[in-house]
Structures are given as structure tokens and as C-alpha cells.
Length: 138
Image 1 (cartoon, one colour):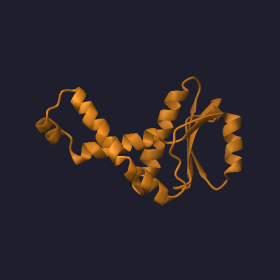
Image 2: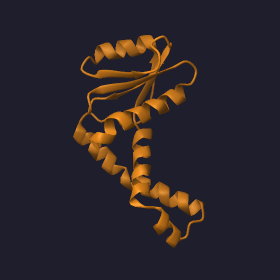
Image 3: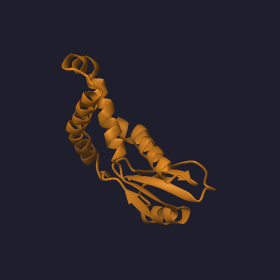
Image 4: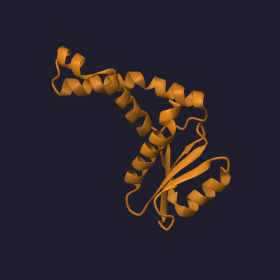
């Protein structure tokens, strides 16, 4: 089993704290990106709206979520050790590999199956976890 990411909030409060803490990073990424694109101050002020900052924050939060990747057997064993989390799985149960994000703050484990693309599956799980479970919480 492989694991990457840094965010696995245990509680709603921890999820909110992590989400709020990402605002400065989102602003800095936007500032440096727009500088690289040649935006002057007026264009930056016009185009980098609060909605753009929120979108950057959402993307950063999702990209930092912990994701485990492993075999179906490893996922099943992990789930047996965490019976308190509801499984929400995308994909086919016949596929050999699973990527999953435990989200105890919302009581679920989000999972996606994959055959040959572990990074794509990890990305899909992060988007699924954020869009379906964290967004309403945050």
C-alpha cells in the first residue's frame, strides 16, 4: 500500500481549520501565477476575484488530501479495521486496485478503483471526497 498527501482531518473543526489555513497559500499561488502571466496590478485586481481565490483554495485543499493506493485485498482489510466509516466507492468491484481517502470528519471513506493509472485514481478520489463530502461541510 502506498500513501501520499497531508490532510486527513479527524473532525469537522480540523477540516475547517485546514481549509481556512490554506487561504494564504491559495493567494500566493495566484499572485505568483498571475505575475508569471504578466498581469499588472489593475488586471490582477480585476480578474482575481474572491471566487477565484475560493476556487484555488478548494483545489489546494483537495490536492492535499491523504490518499492510500493498494490492492483490493488491502482496501478490504483497511475497511475491516475502520468499520465506523461508510464506504462510498466509484468504479467496478472487479478491478484489482483501489485508491481511497478516509474522511472521518464526515464519516466516510471515498474510494475509486483503477487498473493501470494510480495517479488518476488518486486525483479522482480527491475530487470526489471534496465535491461530495467536504464542500458542504466547509
